[in-house]
Amino acid sequence: EIVLTQSPGTLSLSPGEGATLSCRASQSVSSRYLTWYQQKPGQAPRLLIYSASKRATGIPDRFSGSGSGTDFTLTIKRLEPEDFAVYYCQQSGSSPTWTFGQGTKVEIK
Amino acid sequence: QVQLLESGPGLVKPSETLSLTCTVSGGSVSRDYWSWVRQPAGKGLEWIGHIYSSVTYYSPSLWSRVTMSVDTSRNQFSLEMSSVTAADTAVYYCASGPWSLDYWGQGTLVTVAS
Image (cartoon, rainbow over all chains, first blue to last red; front, side, top):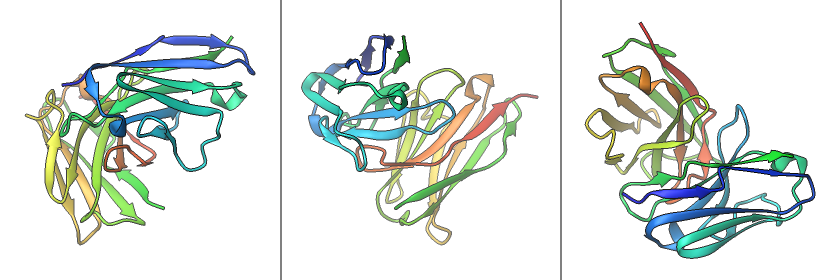
C-alpha cells in the first residue's frame, strides 16, 4: 500500500501570503492518479486538483499543483480568507487500493 | 451534475453491522466508480473502498469486514461493515469518480455505542 506523507502538518499564514504544501509518496505514483482536496469544517471535501496539476471546475487559478514520481506540491498564491482549510492529497495509482495523506491545515496566523 | 445522499442509522451497537446507502442522482450506478470514505471526528480521511460495475475493491485494513453493492433499480450503492467497534465511529461519505473523487455526499455521522 502506498503511504502519502503530507507536510507540514499545520501552516500558519496571513491572508495575501503564499502557501506551499507537500505530499510525498512511499513509492512512485503516476501523476494521473494524484489528487488534492480542500475541506472546510463541517463540510465534505471538495475536489481541487486532479492529475497532479489540473484544476477542477470552478477552482481559482491561484491554486496550482505540480510534481511527479514521489513528490507533489500544492501551491496557493495570495491566500484568500476562504482558503483557510485542511488540504488532503490522495493517490489512486496503486489500483485497486487508494490512500489519502493525513492532511495539512492552513490556518490564519 | 452528480448528486449523492447518504442514509442509514446514526447509531449502531458494538459488534453489530453498520449499513449505509447512497442514493445517486444525475448519474448511473451501473457505470463509473462509487466509493465510501470515512472520517473520525478531528481526524483525516480514510478510503474504505469502491465498486465499479459490481466489482469491489476494499482497503486492506477493512476488507474482512466490508461489503459494497449496487442496486441499479434504485440507482443506489451500499456499504455494510460488520463487527463494528467504537473505532468505527465517524462521518461516512459516499463519493464518485474513476481516479479522483469528483462528487461527494454531505456525509452522515455513525456512532457506535451501546
